[in-house]
Image 1 (cartoon, rainbow over the protein chains, first blue to last red):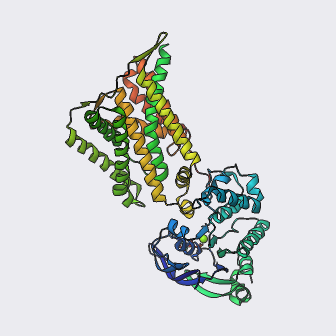
Image 2 (image 1 turned 30 degrees about the vertical axis):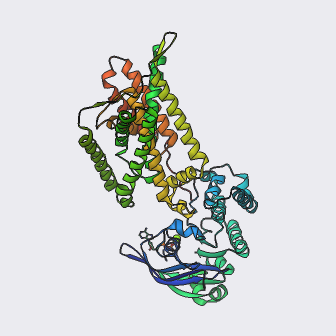
Image 3 (image 1 turned 180 degrees about the vertical axis):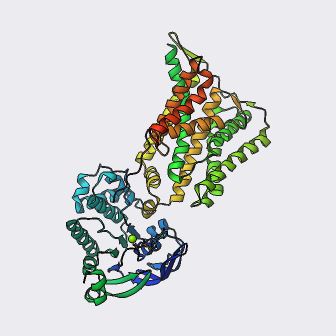
Length: 236
Length: 290
Ligand SMILES: Nc1ncnc2c1ncn2[C@@H]1O[C@H](COP(=O)(O)OP(=O)(O)O)[C@@H](O)[C@H]1O
Ligand SMILES: [Mg+2]
């Protein structure tokens, strides 16, 4: 059974039909990417799955639980979390406090400490800035903090909504390396990206989302060599 | 010497304003609503003290009962009246809160009548230091409110729940992604605000031992003014605004020509500060970073 299974997900914003019944799944251990242009419905999909959007129809199961009707905090407790579009770190709290909040569900103080140290090892920049407030970090540092904060809850499934957005090419490469590493260490990944080339390269499987519909799916390699994808998303 | 007494009195009444202002500001910051009925919780606290004092004669029991009763009331109001309106227009929520305020005042009038009741809690007398004469209750009030504010500040800064409150006031979606139930945080916020309102009712009664169903209205409006002056949503702002307003009030009362206009002067300060800094003294515009 898949770790995450989405069936016939449909979302309306008033009269706008943002998702027109999409189905996809993510198996344990995979990196799965949804690629799509601006406005295709990627963020809507991510927010629906994690329960931030409640007016939706369709079936969503995660790790054997029906999560279609659960609120976000209950879904997160089941072991999934998200690095949201625009990162949404707590601007007025320090790097350290942001990480503590990421570990909100953990009970054991010792484990929280160890986990924060592990995050600092992975992202030395965060250690250097641990007492700086979030709002004063650069875009790249904010992205690292958002990823670190999400990892604190030790999710089975980590979802990332356009993690490369607004970053310099060098940092984009770094972010994709980090995602690949996190996946190698055992975390399943659902990624949403406009940067199709880099994301398909690290993906086991991928789906193409167009105007609220899934129009193509396949392995990362298959989609990279697909004529349609090349034309629409890889610049020829 | 007179000025020192005036300032101590000002800090004491300011401490009460600050406690009430904290309720407004925390609820505003976290639930993003103006809890118009907050002042009436003070009134309910006052009547609870009146009733338990008559039944038991013990100030400490009266205070404890008032705090517990106000917390239950505040949390219940939130669940019954405000929670169903989550996501509704701010105007609908405000009108509901005004309705709750009138409901509480009318209920109090039905139960206790409209004639003010006398509440004698404790006669503490006054203190003479040289030529300085200070009422003991002002000192008690000042010390207690400062202790409460220090505890609240430490709670918000150092505990998990406090941190979750700060997170909620900044970004609800991100807070939920941490696995935090925003509804639970809102409940806790109303509980803390109501407990502070009950204590404010106590200190008010020490100062002026008479209560009617509009007992909470003026302190409520003054404290709201203090919260806005300090920067609504900001906890240190509510404290600063409260003390500032209290000192201005007491100084103004001491100057014969302006004494009758004291309330007007306080609201004028609000207007001037909002003209100079629309977010209040410590209020912040959120920086957006892409
Ligand atoms: N809160 C909203 N209200 C109305 N329409 C929205 C809202 N959020 C998104 N949309 C619309 O839904 C569609 C999908 O948006 P979104 O999921 O953000 O796309 P993507 O993340 O792929 O860029 C777009 O047409 C967008 O304009
Ligand atoms: Mg998006």
